[in-house]
Image 1: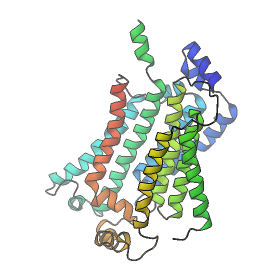
Image 2: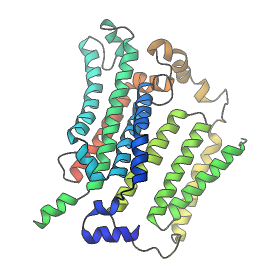
Image 3: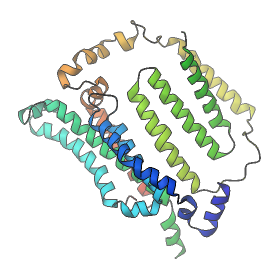
Image 4: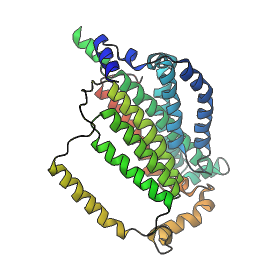
Amino acid sequence: MSAGDADAAASGDEGAGLYVESTIIMTTVRLVAPFILTFALFIMFHGADSPGGGFQGGVIAGSVVMMLAFAYGIDSTRQWLDVRIVSALASGGVFAFVGIGLGAMALGGQFLQYSEFEALFGHAIKYAIELVELGIGAIVAAVAIGLFFLLAAGFDDLAEEDSS
Amino acid sequence: MTLTLIEAALLVFVLGCAVGAALLKDTLAAVMAFAAYSLGVSVLWLVLQAPDVGLTEAAVGAGIMTVLFLLALSNTTSPDVDRLFESVGWRSAALVAGFVVLIGATVPALPTIGDPNSAVVGGEVSQYYLENAYAQTEVKNAVTAVLAAYRGFDTLGEGVVVFSAVVVTLSVLRREVVA
């Protein structure tokens, strides 16, 4: 650990110090990732009937990306994953949640009064709760991924700005 | 209050990990002890029949937090560690001991697990949720019903708090795009 840190600090390239390319890890992650993502979506969608929900499923979905970064390197994962997706998921989740609340008001109810949607489709409360859970899942997954990439990048660009 | 063997073992494990996380000199070792602590607590939640909380603790406490801590550590240089444990000043030890006694004094006030007269089981609000959650929301998991429907406004606030975490990180690191 300390030797790797020293190397990374010396070369000024933290990514190289962090990443160890390993066929075993890459193969395992490639094999396991789809199942974990499926499990995350299951927890997210099935939160109404079993333990879990948007928050837990979102965290697990976010950890899939961390796992990919662990296997294939943070920088290549960052390039593979469009940054716009992360921002869109985070703000889209908040907008969906607020939108459901405001939609209920538009239909004549109070903020987040799901029963108002009964006029539009059946089982409105149940589906509104599911939608809210998905929104929370999107926020949490995107924030987990975003914090991961931001912490990994750290002050890199800032240091370059100051030196130039 | 009687402990089953598994509860007692988990409590010892969790306490050991917590003390280890506080006392270990090497930061990496402390982070790993903290992860093990979270894992132990999440199993403890499962044993206490709170799977929703246990799932959250395992995913966030043992998973994401550990990765973020490790990432933060890898961006710093750690000094060479000469010994295993941090030296503890008597003032900090006394402070921690006092705090433990203070918190421990509240434990007897908690209802025993499964007590039919405890506020958790017999309280008006919990009973209302348990009796009406399915009829009113068509959601079988009462925890989800409370979080997303009865306390939807709270949950919206929590979602925005999580969202603002990434916004704050962006502004602290002076970046314009996530990732």
